[in-house]
Length: 87
Image (cartoon, rainbow, N blue to C red; front, side, top):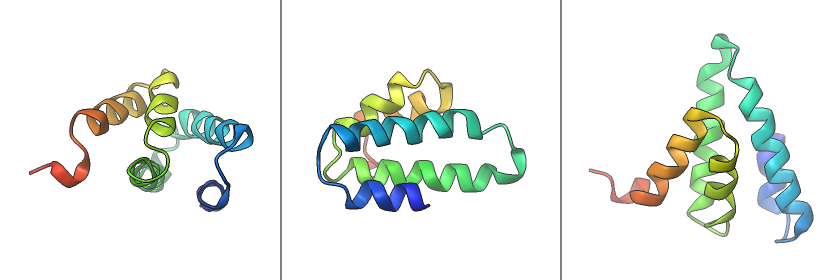
């Protein structure tokens, strides 16, 4: 959660983009622990919420570039139909 809060506080810069990619790389490898799967999805959900704000392009691009099937799928779904427009 600390990583997400830091991303929220950082101004748009190359450092923020690097931090975002580092966090997504962490998430890419952190989903193997089934006991913490709910936390993993909560963090993914927070990233997608941030994508509806000041990170409109950065987060979906980074999620798709992760080469993780679930992260890529959620990024594509968010591009096609943001959560606010889903039935």
